[in-house]
Amino acid sequence: MSQLSDISRYTDEFLRIRECGDWSNAVNGLQVENSGKVTKIGAAVDASTRTFSAAAERGVDLLLVHHGLFWPGLQAVTGAFRRQVALLLERDIALYSAHLPLDVHPLVGNNAQLTAALALHDPVPFLEMKGQLVGLRSTMAVARDDLHRRLEQSLGGAVKLLASGPTITASIGVITGGAGSEIYAAAREGVDTFITGEAPHWAAVAAEELRVNLFLGGHYATETFGVKALAAHLAERFSIPWEFIAAPTGL
Image (tube, rainbow, N blue to C red; front, side, top):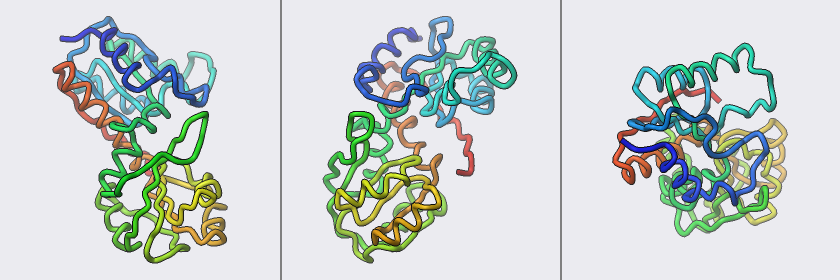
C-alpha cells in the first residue's frame, strides 16, 4: 500500500508539472485528494461520471486523467459537477490530471508513445505552444498508404486521411488531440504530413492549399497512450496494480 502524497509528489516531478505551461483550466496535478492510501491506479482520458463510476466498481483509489475536472472553467458545485465531486469523495477516489505535461513528456507522453508505435525514426520536438515545444517531428520517407495502415493499427480504428500532400513523406509531424488548427504552423516548420486527433472544418481546406497530408485519428484515440504509459510507470515504481478505463467519446 502506498501513500497518495508520495505518488503525487513523484509524479509532479516526473512530469515537470510546475514547469510546463498550459491552459488555466487544466489545473495540472492532484485535483482531488482521497484519505491518503493508494491500492490501485486507474487511467482514463477524461474526468467524467462514467470514468469515476467505473473506477469505483474496479476498486481504483487513484485515477489518472488527461482532461481533468475543471475543463469547463469556474462553476458552482451543482448538477452534474456536484455529482462528479460527490462520487469521488464518497468512494474515496483521488484524481490526478496532467494535460500538456503529459503530452510533451519524452518517455510516457502521448506524442512520444504514438511516434514509437508508428516506428518513426529520431523524432525531435517542434511547434511551440504555451512556452514549450509540444509536438514531435520525424524526417522520414514513408509511403503515405503505409503510414495510414500503421496509424489505424496503432489506434485500433479508422483514421481519416486528407491526402493533399506527397505520396512519400519527407517530414512527419505528430501532435495528439485537437491540434488540427495548428496545420499552418506545422507547414511553416516544413511538415508535409501532419498527424493529430481532430481538426476544424477549415483545416481540410488548409491542407489542400498547403499540400499537406492530414491524418485525423480521433481526439480520444490519440490520447489514450499517455495515461496508460504513466499508470504503468507508477505501478512499477510503487508496486501497485493498474487498469485502463476505456470511455471513448466517439470524437
